[in-house]
Picture 1 (cartoon, rainbow, N blue to C red):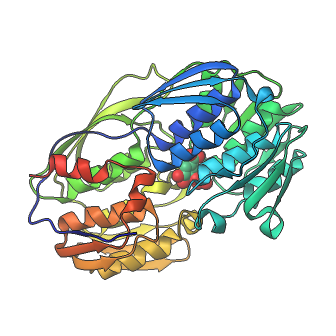
Picture 2 (cartoon, rainbow, N blue to C red):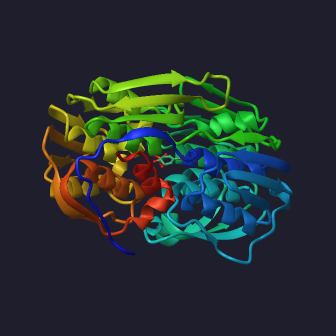
Length: 429
Ligand code: S3P
């Protein structure tokens, strides 16, 4: 862990960026390609640490995965022919890998052990283990399966009809992935719709899945067929540059190939509500995941309220939205976002603590935060808490802060955006 000092003197940002592949879709491409028997090819794959850990887990299960730049080729014997790994499956910092794999591994005929880094060791896993146990899964771990390391004895599963207690695509996806192997029809009911990449990919890999008014229905025992997955650019990574472009004077940034799946594009609505100078050119809807070119220019922003059903559609963007709000006129209120407390770190506390150090007028609430703007930001020594999105929020803040911003550990950014600083430097004028 080494510290990074950033100081930008009246920067403007101009140029094009093609953001790296979507993290959620990249993980799922490896998972689905490994479950399916035969060949799957992936383009635009995210070479972030989280996704590389997913690859590593499936290699340990006997799946052949070749990485050539951002192209990945998966040759799998199919889930029934995976080998029982002699080693522990290491999921690093990745909640998506840990939770989705729990669903997948529960329906195999294998004994496996999964563990991750210190952050993963503190994140709740029973939200996934409990519904999987209702399906018959055998999962053991600290605090009755709440925390890693987790041991899974795979076996026969039965379908469930499950109403989601929290809006979580990870929980929904773990149940659906187990549901592929289960006997009967698995139904997942969501009050607030979470990202639907799993449902889209089930369809792409030939499974019959229906989604109707927040109810996902999947027949068990279906075989997946290998295919090609084209990973869109990650809107959660693009978000940092949307905010950077809006906040720095004399800027114009063109973001290419950004995924705009409507279960993920809440940040666009927030920017529009705040009056951002932004245009969106759709690349057409005839792909599994729609994409667009988004242009953002320096903007005069007004405060907004972010609450309710939009929260799952922008949950990972809240740190950078909070930064955006420090420069908007008026009081921005973010609520219904208590899920932030169980991300890579407690993101309510982390965002509020670190933005305060920079001079922001921000207070934590039980389920979000209140930010009063605009406030000029100054230099400070910031902590990332080992959380990539807190690190990137700090780096974007450095673009508008007067003085030096130091990040105690910027290496964590490689989890989702290994080329982040290179991309800043490419457009810095
Ligand atoms: C993800 C779902 C979200 C998100 C995470 C990725 C996914 O988590 O925060 O970064 O790929 O399914 P929850 O579904 O637990 O909110």
